[in-house]
Amino acid sequence: MIYLIGNWKMAPEKNTQAVDLVKKTAVIAKQYKKTLVTVICPPTPFLSLVSKNTKVPLLVGAQGVAASEAAAQTGLVSASMLKENGAQYCIVGHSEMRARGESNDMIKQQVDRLLEKKLIPILCIGEKSRDAQGWYLSEVKDQLDTAFADVSALQIKKLIIAYEPVWAIGAGAERAATPIECREMTVFIRKFLNDKYGEKIAKAVPIIYGGSADEFNARSFVEEGGTQGFLVGRVSLDAKRLAALAKSISQEKK
Ligand code: PEP
Image 1 (cartoon, helix red, strand yellow):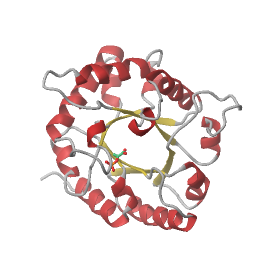
Image 2: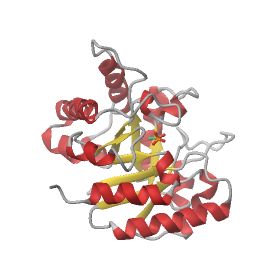
Image 3: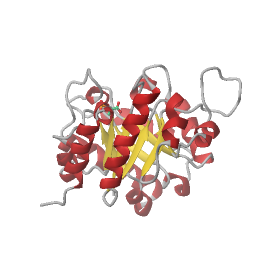
């Protein structure tokens, strides 16, 4: 199965638009349910509304979680609350949250809280920029080392890793990664998992790609980039483009 995970970020503005989008996305999820696992991650205020208007095969995730369950944390939401409101997945470590000050240590605690509550973390990792010598690999290694400190082999099977090079994300992106760049990092992450948890686990953890993925380039990431799915930002807000993306990655290999 290929993951298609939509990160709605801070959109849309209105409840009615959120309901409209979830209904359109549900049609896509149903159409491609044999090949895709489709998940949408709306902003927290829409979580309950979206969950009520969704049914399997379209699944729901959240965009962030507090690092602890302590109640005195103004503005944050706990893993329990996310679960209570229909989330099964949750994005953590997104570069836009790291840019607002979230450290590798905080992200590790968020992963722990989600696993405790049996929510599936979508752990985003990725380098800010690339250099010819490959130093960017150590930036990603630090993110992996911290996130997986003390995470057992049993727990890690319940997690998705999203490789999202920061320079490829969002409206200000330089460009999408190439499938070759994606493959290099997928192999690097897989090797990390293999060294730490062994081959069986390393093979079981889905590694997906995010960063300017669209209906035109997505298939090449599946065919040549070694990816097992996508975390999609902008395209997830446009049902027509999302449907085209879903179609492109669902086609059988020639
Ligand atoms: C993202 O923010 O996770 C993302 C992948 O965004 P976009 O698809 O818009 O580049």
